Length: 197
Image (cartoon, rainbow, N blue to C red; front, side, top):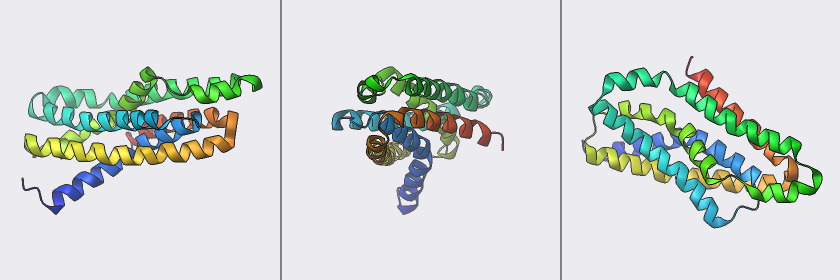
């Protein structure tokens, strides 16, 4: 395949489409942690970018090796995303509702941990495995370039989500965790419901 305008445009548009769930979760993370430092913001956006690049590559590998196994696993993707995002969102909701007024300042800056961030990255990017079908005709080099473009677009979009979430989270103070948790649960339900229609 030739690396022309069409290739780059398609890869960037794939990145934009795939990054929407990650954007929403980044927004929720920014809401939950309005005092997030720049280094952590880059780490959060980088984690989402990593998984958004990894999943299409795994899908591409599956297409070129074990297609029949991947097709049976594909039915589980919405269930996995719903369970992971529902769990994290429910935990954020619970912590936001049960936080006492005196603890709000501490809770506000605690934010998402590394383990939860990995789970969020997997949950928001697992549907990107299907993109392996879309890029199946690409050679290995083109698939890697497409994955890197998807990662770059995701990183920029997620940084925007975190910045917006931080600003709004500062305004909402202690109730931001509740809104962030509700957003995560909604995204999980949206992934699950749209997979059936």
